[in-house]
Amino acid sequence: MKKTLRYNYRLKPTIEQEANLIEFGAYSRGLWNLLLSENIRRYQHDKTFLFYNTMASLIKELKEFEEFAWLKAFDSAAAQQVARDLETALKNSISKGRVQRFPNHKVTFKQKKLHNDSFRCVNNSNCIRIENGTISIPKIGKVPIILHRNLVSTIKTVTVQFRHGKWTASVVQEIECQVAKKVLTSIVGYDINSQHTVVGSNGWYVKNPKSFKQSKEKLGQLQQQLARRKKGSGRWHKTKQRINTLNGKISRRRLAFAHELSCSIANSSDIIVFEDLNVKAMQQFNGSMVNDNVMGLITQLSKYKAELRGKVYHEIGRFEKSSGICISCNHHHKLSLSQRTFACHQCGTIQCRDWSAAMSVAKSGETGLIAGGIVARVKPNTQHKAANQTKVFERSKLAVGSEKKEAI
Image (tube, rainbow, N blue to C red; front, side, top):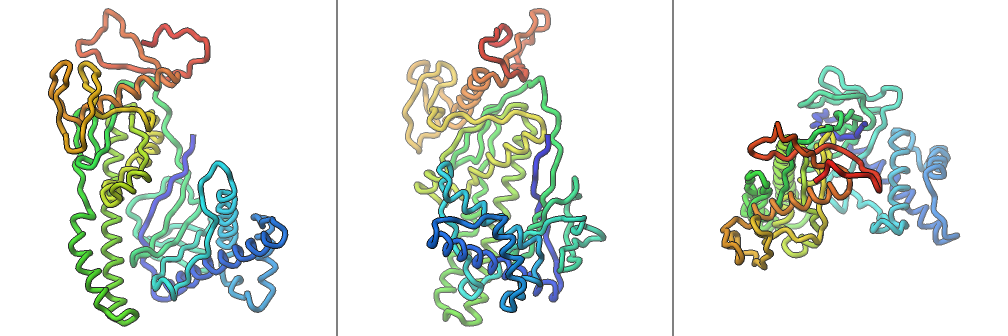
């Protein structure tokens, strides 16, 4: 089984190369706006859209006109990728199963005052190569790259983007997943909350680093400084660039923390159980806390890293109760957000709210996996029965009506 992954690398282009990269980003944005305008005009005329084949032939025809000579300077494969992206955006906007808005025109550089355009190149005939600390980009040349990790397989596509004052290359590769484990010896449930980013049923606590809160005071000072500047002046642009750089530093800290945490989660157990959190609704309640806690990102990264290692990732239902359940007698309690510990009304056990929630997530995940036939609980032999009664599972997709003698 193969999986497509994306690795980001930092680019160090020369002045001439940077100018060409900015031009290519503008070409990509201009072509998107051109094709989108043509789609809107066509829909107003006969209620139809232009899709990839028609848009690709239209790009080829436009190159013959003098007004569109800039299309010849742009990479043809990158232009085709713009048409593919627009086709995907159009199909998602008119599909009943996807809740996505109709694509918009991309804002020009003069309105944004920032070079944040991007374009994607395709590795046709091995035209994109990484050699001697440089990456060859079609019609750009060999751009210096910081190769902090080696490539695993051949390059499929490369997306070049300018974000927060830095040029980056996002390399897409296909990686072979490890063979799925047949015997699974450990299951851990994880609870995500505001105080601790992750609390595991195995007793593992990870505190929230709060990257945004650490830089909130400095960011507020820069925003006040920007408000005092004359809009459009040199100092106004410098202050805005400092704000953009600080936001980029916060974003990279969050991403690095999420990757480190998800790697630890993927390596800790064979079965990983999370809650299906409604992150969008939680952002309306407290958006800064949810964004600073990278709740949704941790589950996404943990899922694909578990699949790479041949392990099982599972999410319990969104409306399934996990908080306030006693780990001893399963008695349910109603707790406020300020209550971090509670004593059970039935058995009197004093326990941590977060840890009991993680234990409930693990139990619910185990029940759901066995009920779905994804795993089966293995009965230990009486001769080899362990003292600590370690849970052992095996992968089995049980058919409907089959006997489940070995499952508990």
